Every structure is written in C-alpha cells, then in structure tokens.
Image 1 (cartoon, rainbow, N blue to C red):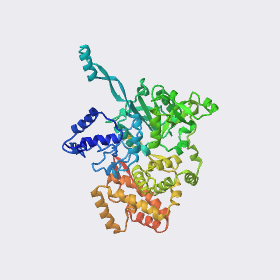
Image 2: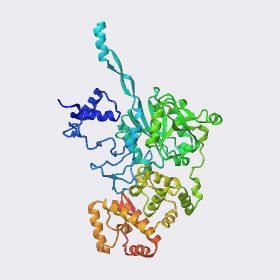
Image 3: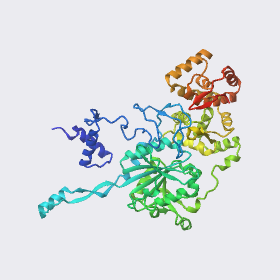
Length: 580
C-alpha cells in the first residue's frame, strides 16, 4: 500500500500545514474544485490537477498587477513590458488628453518589493467569526435531534466567515503619479490576500479649494458619481478603513480630512497608511499631531478604544479628546505590528497619532517659502536634506525632459544600481524631489473649441536645471541622456525607426547619437512623435550649450543645418517647432 506522502494532495496539505494555514477538508476540496473549474488542460504543478488560468490573471499572488487605480495599460503576456502613456491625473470634468503622447514601452518594475513578507505580516487578520447573515445546516446536531427526539427539522448555525472587510480609500494628491504603481500593487495584494471578506477601493479627490469628493472604483473603472462618505460606515464594526495618503494635500491643512477621519472612526476601525517613510512625516500634515504608541484589548478597536502608552499625566491631559488612529507604512514590520495590535494579540503596540481639530488651520503651504528662494538656494537646501539617491535622481532628471515616461526609465536605472533597493523604491526618492520645491507644475491647455482637458506636467523651477547640471560630470550626464534616448527611440514603431535612421545617415552619416538626434524635431518622426520630440529638442539643446566647448558647437551646428520645418497640424492645432 503506498504511503500517504505518495499522494500529491497529501503533499499539498502538508505544505499548507507547514505554512500554518489551517484548512478543513471541505475548504481544501473547495479550493481545488474552484481551480479545476477555471482550467482547460494544464496541470497544477505538483498536484496533477488540470488548470489553465486566463491570460489576464497572474499565476500567483505575488505577480505584478495591471493597475486598477485609474486607466492603465494592460500587462503583456510575458510580464516584461507594458505600454505606458504619458498622462497626468485628471480633474473631475476631464474627458480627453490635451496632446497625443507616444506610447513608450517600459519594462515592468516592481514598486512593492516585499509583497511576500507583507502577506505574512497580515496573517493575524485572517481569523474567522460566525456570520451575521449566512447559516448552514449542522448535520451532526440534526442527526442527533432526529435520533433522540424524533424532531425532523434541521439544526442551523451561523457559517464561519472572514472577520473583516476592507475599504481602501486612496487620497489623490499632487504626488499621486509618484505612488501610482505602489498603490496599484498594494491594492492588488489586498484583493487576493484572503484575510478580508470583501475589498473595495475608493478614491478621495482633494484637488483645488473644493470639498473632497469620494468615488467608488469598480472593475470597469472609476464611478464618476460622487458618493457620500457615510456609505463607509458599518455599525457592526467589521469594516476596516485603510486611508492611503502621503498627507500633503491642502484638504489636510483645511481640516476636511480630519472631519472625514473623525466621522469614519465613530463606527469603523480606521488606519492611516502613510506612503512617505517616517523620516519625512514632518513634511506632511502629520507634524500637526502627536506620535504615540497605541494598544487596545479589543480587536478592531475604534478611535476611542485605543490607549496611548507611556505618556506623562500632563501630556495625557493635553491629548485628551483627540482622535487616536494607528499610522503604518507599507513595510512588513510596521504592518505586522499593526495587524497584531488590531487583532488584539497579546500586548502588542503599534505606532499611532493623536489628532486635534484645532491643529488643522488653513495656513500657508509648507513650501510657500520656495517663492523667495533663488535657484541656487533651492538646490542647496535640497542637497542638505535629501538622501544621496534622491540627489542622484535629480541630477539625472536635469539632463532630460520631466515627463512620467522618462521618470519611470530613470527610476528603473536608479533602482537597478541601488544596493538598498529592497528597502526603498525610487518612488520615495522622487517624492523627496517633489517635496523639495525644485519642480513646478506646467499646464498644457487645449484649444477652446476642442473641449480638451488641461494636462498637468512638471518642469524645474527656472534656473534649477542649470544649477543641477553644473554639479554632474559631463560624461555621466551624456551616458544618462544617451541611455534614455536610445531606450525611447527603440520603442517607437519600426517604420518610424527606419525612416529616422535613414534620414540621419543621409544627412550626417552615422556619427549622430539618438540623444543628439532629439535636437532635430524636423526629422521624419511623424505627427504624434514630433509633438513629444519638441520637449526633447528644447532640453537637449540647452544641455549641450550648457556643457560648452564641442557640445555647444554641435548644438549650434545642428541648429544651422536644420531646415525650417513646416507647421505640423495635430488635432486641428498648429504648432511651429523650434529650438529654444
């Protein structure tokens, strides 16, 4: 007779036991049955069960997702490249982009680098409780009743179900594009983790001076009808609200966010998931609160049920009546502490904050002083406070146009060379640059008759680019520019590449690099590509002239040889391309 280990399912069951995942035989059978229902001929590795997941479904929990936070290109089947479209977050009335961008294929990068560890850290939340709605027949008790009392009626009892459901509220701030991939991957992980009975995602849009508006995000996209914040309330205290934010928006300073958190925490456990690392919290609205250690003897504690530990009587009196909320970063260890404290496991404490309504007054923005600083002073202040990697990223950005496709390429280059890439991602370094005041928003508006939206992009504050370029070696800057330019060029359609290469060979031989070629918007890029090449031409010409010597001569020579281009019509809008 074969031993138990000879059966693949027994091995699978043992693997689950070793991972401390306690499943009943019925639950295990249901999981395998569901897997079989989604199959067409391929076998689950090691189990001999046929399965064929759809192409759009990642093969495991830790695959990189296609983002659902807002319209995002689909991940290719090989998982290596995806189409990234240059696009900024839109306001509520936006319907269309102001310009037609180049779809640049960029290899997928991992924004959330500790997904497996994060998944393990959240295990304390995977408890089950009796359902308040669903009931099941208790077969054994029913049989005993029939046998002993001759009562032929079923005995029912509540079905076990997951303890909590999760509501992820994403605040759309000015740094939303920086965190986009991190948020998308975290949302994907929560949806497939298994700790929560249901996971829903909401967006809180706080742009401008208007009151924050809440929108439900569905599988088909963002529902454009504003919803009431009271929809998130759950009198049963079994809906956990996770508020994802970098806490830098104007709505925090005006007190609007505090009002929402106070409303939700009356009936729901609420936690702030801070996207910035703790060392940068003093640059956010959290500096208006008091950091404390929180503990509760009740699972799923509300604000009033958390106890602030280690406070002096004087400080405890000063914080009385404040809103006590856990604050956690998206890292395994803080999430583990928070999960254990939320589930009231032992005497576990978690980082928290006490917020008071009178601490949030509409003062001047934190970066208001940047208007009085010169470009040199801005850069000096940045170099005195920013991390080494953030400074390196800023130097790279100075060589190229500031748009999101280029930034993604630079971030990937930075992470690839970073020794501590598993600890922090390039998104954090980019956030440091945005918080420093080195960048300013640049709006590209559409023609009135086109009814197109205003697309917000960014550029360095006047003079900052030249100051940064003065600190980076020419050889290193040229290497960065050429690497990014070559990558972007190779992602253009094959016919565009062939046409441009042929024209370069005809006019200059083979001595012209792609970085230098971007100085020439009159090359046969095509209408859509020409619009994007304009920004490269402007920056490249300035960079070459800034380097001086042979580079300045090359820039001047290319400009002289360039024949004046004909105006290019893009969406009934005429632009004259020139080198500034």
